[in-house]
Image (cartoon, rainbow, N blue to C red; front, side):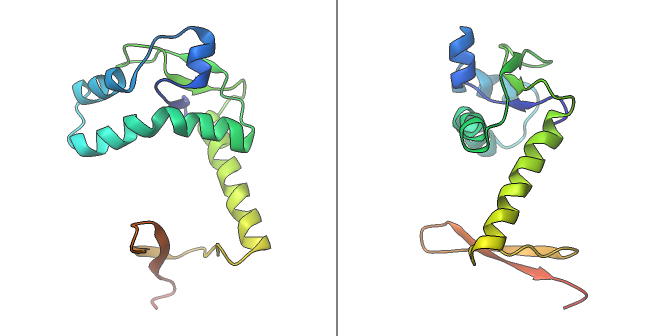
Length: 135
């Protein structure tokens, strides 16, 4: 995450004329030693839409694309800032804080250990079982 975020077939890549695909990203990731193909399929399959979402919903600058080790195409997205991973994480944290302040859709609990994600009938995460202070 310190170098940026990887995404295949993003809008940024298309604008820059970079030819990339989910299939190529998946192949690169498996060649790199990934042990769980089912996880790789989700990671790579969602990567382009996820990068585009970060740019559009959080107004993040991910306009620079580089080819880093193990990749067959330029797909590591970053902006002009020095620490892209921290920039992305900070933007996400700020959004969750806003949601928690303005609604009951989220609650931030610090210094707690998550044990289990709670899901609804559709499989969407709706909560977490956690431990805080031994309880």
